[in-house]
Amino acid sequence: MPDCYQPLRLPRSEHHPLNGHPCHVLRWGEADAPALFMLHGWMDCAHTFQFVADLLPQWQIIAPDWRGFGDSGWNSGSYYSADYLADLDALLQHYSPHAAANVAGHSMGAMVGGLYAGIRPERVAKLALVEGFGLADSRAAEAPGRYARWLREKQQPPAYQPLASLAAVARRLQERNPHLGAERAAFMAQALTTQRDGVLSYRADPRHKMVNPVLYRLEEAKACWRRIACPVQWVIGGEMWDHPMAKGVFDTLDERRACFADLREAVIADAGHMVQWEQPAGLAATLQSFFAQEQSV
Image (spheres, rainbow, N blue to C red):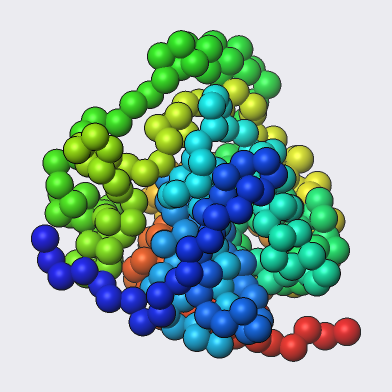
């Protein structure tokens, strides 16, 4: 196992019942520093932002583990996107009840943040969407098969195979993310896994791999995006184009862009989907420039 990345700033670990569910939150920085809420993606955890947090010392970064990920509680059944909207609403109510929040999300976290900013526009001051511009549109004809698959998976939920070692996990992370260095890969291998009954396994609830019976409707997402009142920063990895999330999304970027009244974009070179792992300095600089900029009245 290679040497592990040594954080420059250690986060505080907090546990709160948010939206009636046990939620684990990491906080970097002083409590009186300006707050930046950072929302991780699918099968990830709050530690994913460690490398970026180290480069934003002027900010208090607040990052939850979404339900069923990291050290937050698991659901007793399936997971639905609306629950994450309610979890984010509860998170902001807990940490920023009287002020609109600065929010940055990656992948699934960006999708949740983007919907939320249109549903509750008064609660978000600025929004950064990192590699999370929605999913490919679905068709009504997909519904019967999706529901049938969901029923099968309810009867026999997915499970993980035991992991060989932390070193093997780190190597796999590097294979999927070619610009991820060995020390950061070792750090994330530890953050994403845990020992259960002596067996190394991923922290995330494997039921996240069940098919979502609720179809993704692009028109619904676009309706939410059109109601966003705050400035929005898109961040795109320069080598993202062959990622599965790009399918059906990047060929419709123009119609998605048109939904945002105040949009700017940044492309970060030598990065795929996991920008915060592969190019944390580039992402930190982009976020600092965007969130520190005075908002025009």
